[in-house]
Length: 222
Image (cartoon, rainbow, N blue to C red; front, side, top):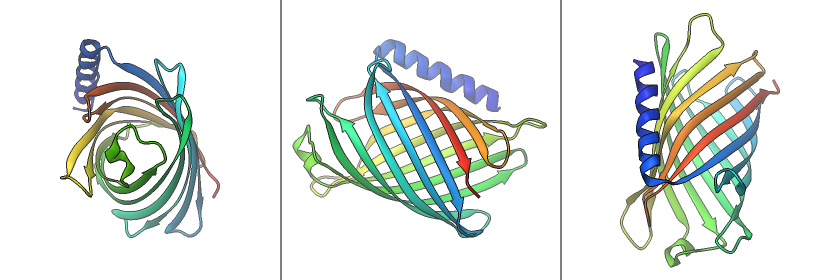
């Protein structure tokens, strides 16, 4: 079942992108976690993202947040992201983003189903369109399925995420979607790496596709 999902996502994404002849980028991340208590976790991460066929840095950011585990199924979190993004004039401008998460995890034998609802607010200092001068409110719904391979430290996954924007001057609308697959490898309790391939599709103001290869390293301090 999981193998078929992987193949379907890869083929559909490739077919669309060949037809659209759109962009390609690589995203690199480094993240750390520290357990303050058994239920409270401090997270910090750095990431930079490229586009223009991975030849140009599109943005880089620092993120800091806290996560609180309510029980074995639910957790909540709050984060701040300081972003520097390259805009149309080829200069980097600051974006400030705040967001809150509600996460749900459900083990299903060797599978694990994950759902994350994220509400984020962002303020831009550069606006290509007049409506972008407004504070940007986004609701995000992410669905993910992981598979625990027997006797292996590798964990494959597939995901689908939908973005909805709430405007102060117009109606609620879908603005983008992401879907793809990933693979993580856990060396031990403190160190893990990950890689993935996904499609990042903007729906407004024009339909645009970005193929992304992602690479990450995460460590636990405690």
